[in-house]
Image 1 (tube, one colour):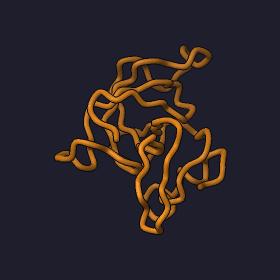
Image 2 (tube, helix red, strand yellow):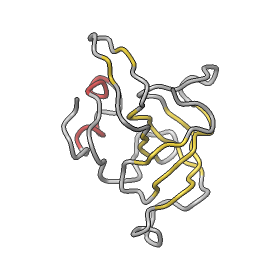
Image 3 (cartoon, one colour):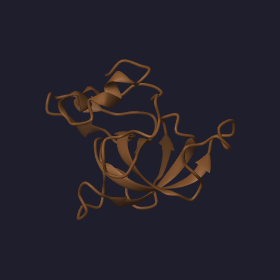
Length: 128
């Protein structure tokens, strides 16, 4: 369950490392966000090696898609999806254009049935 002020790891090569959640864009009235929700983020920390060549700067606002959460969520197929960390992938504005060109680690298979199918093709691991 991600809410305002939650700390999230960025799992793409955009240059950001840690981001804080400001608002849930997908469901503005809901308090918590789950896997697949669009968030408004503030970038708090950059990766050390990519600090000067980063595509995004510290303190900037960005949109992100929540791809992993520690709290499990029941899927339509009867699976319980749970990860070890809270992670997000960064976007340009509200469109589906990604800032990074790679995504590190595994992603849930539920993105196969959404408009974010492209992120499954560029992730390094297979979908769960």
